Image 1 (cartoon, protein in one colour):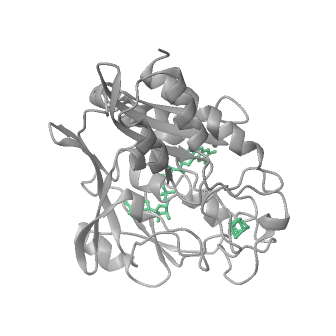
Image 2 (image 1 turned 30 degrees about the vertical axis):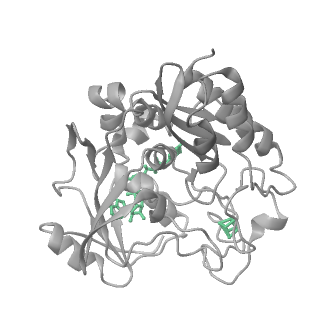
Length: 326
Ligand SMILES: Cc1cc2nc3c(=O)[nH]c(=O)nc-3n(C[C@H](O)[C@H](O)[C@H](O)COP(=O)(O)OP(=O)(O)OC[C@H]3O[C@@H](n4cnc5c(N)ncnc54)[C@H](O)[C@@H]3O)c2cc1C
Ligand code: SF4
């Protein structure tokens, strides 16, 4: 591990002033970053600790839910209003990592966690994301867990966050503050597809800080769920997952929000599924049609073709769980 200085800002402005310096990373719970430091994947000269900033509130209003960036994953998962009004968020968090990690890991850090592609985390392997221009070991190598949506010749790594899938489905907005002031970004636009620059993963500018995430209230948030399929029942990343939220009245679907995880180079919203659901009856045939549409445009490779069938089944099952088996 490269030696680094550890600093703390007096307030948000001072934190950003420190965070904009070249060679600096922010550190929140440290559950992802510290491993990357130990493995020499990240080599910052300075860490700016976000602990102590006043960013750990959970606020519920009729307009929606606001989660401070430093709120712990476990606090959000266990919050009674989140469980009642936004169950997909609670379930996505409870399906993530392990209790000890959820007690430390934060909402901001979760959204910005790095991919679990094993070649990215092994400095002996070529990896365009870690060392631009060196190549992608996964494309010809072992890519069973990699993306079937959004990949390029440069990178096919999946985005690992379960929470991000739930928040993308619910039209969440990320509140940022940086050297050039404050701005809001829709979560669907926070993460970038790899294209020719897999090393550039988000639209964040140097030193920009996530302050909070907001989820607008909607008739669909209460009737929502997260289904995750993985190689073992806990402490494992998604092979496929689905976040589903439905507004159903008189047996008819009025609104639908659907996103998938474990399959995309970023949290993957499924607009074709949503469009097909709206106006349709809440029946088994509708859920099956939604599942079939979930894989339109998928580009699987040799080892991950199984994800196409698995994703169809995951989305169908998640829709059934939320909408009922009429
Ligand atoms: C064994 C293991 C299993 C896991 N399984 C899962 C899983 O199944 N599903 C899942 O979703 N996750 C999983 N995770 C990932 C875990 O959820 C993340 O490590 C955690 O959420 C990161 O939060 P943190 O606060 O510790 O972030 P840190 O490690 O402190 O930071 C992560 C990144 O975010 C940046 N950052 C943090 N906060 C901010 C901010 N407010 N503004 C700007 N930048 C910021 C940091 O600079 C760093 O680049 C697993 C992790 C481990 C170690
Ligand atoms: S898939 Fe992406 S992260 Fe994995 S080796 Fe290729 S370039 Fe690196």
